[in-house]
Length: 236
Image (tube, rainbow, N blue to C red; front, side):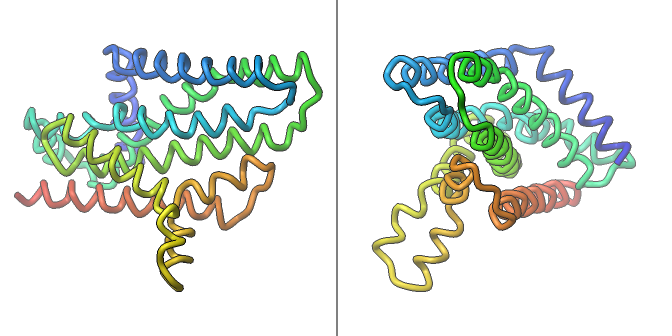
C-alpha cells in the first residue's frame, strides 16, 4: 500500500502542476452553477435534486478528461515499462492513479457545497436527500473514474481513451432505456446494470446497501480490468 500512496502523491502533484485539474474543476463548477441558478430562479423548492441529476450528467463528460492520460500517457512515453521494473505490484499502480483522480473529484464536488449553504440559508430543506445526493455523486464519480482508468489502458492515445471512456460510461448510464424493448430476464439485468437506476434512489434520500454495493462493484470490476491490462504490459 505504501507504493500506492507514493504513486497517488505523484499523480496528484501532476494534476495540480498542470492545467488539467483547474480546467476540469472550472468547467464542472461553471456548469453546476448554471444548473443551480436555473433551478433557484424557476422554482421555490428547497431541494438540490435538480443539481444532483444534472451534475451526474456533467460527471459523464469530465471523468474521461481526468483519467485519459493516467495510463495512456505512460504507455506513449514508455514510462509505464520503467515504472513496472520497480518493486511495485500492478494493482498498486492502478489504485494509486485511481485514488489521485478520485481526490480531484471529491474536491470538485466539495466546492459545490455553496449550493447547500444557500438552500439552508433561504429555505428549510430536508438534509437527508442532500446528504444522500452528495454521496450518490461521489460514488458515481468513483465508478466513472474506474471505467476511465480501464479505458486509458487500452490505447496510447489520450483522445481515444477519453472517447472510449465516455462511450462506456454513457452506455452504462442509459442502458436501461432499452430495457422495455426486451423480455425477462434481460430487462431485469439491464435495469440493474444501469448506473442511473441506482443513482435515483439516493436523490430521494434513500440509502440502500445494494446501491452502494453496486457502485463499489463497478469500481472493483473495472479496476481489476485495468490491473490486468497493466499486467499484460509488464510481459510484452
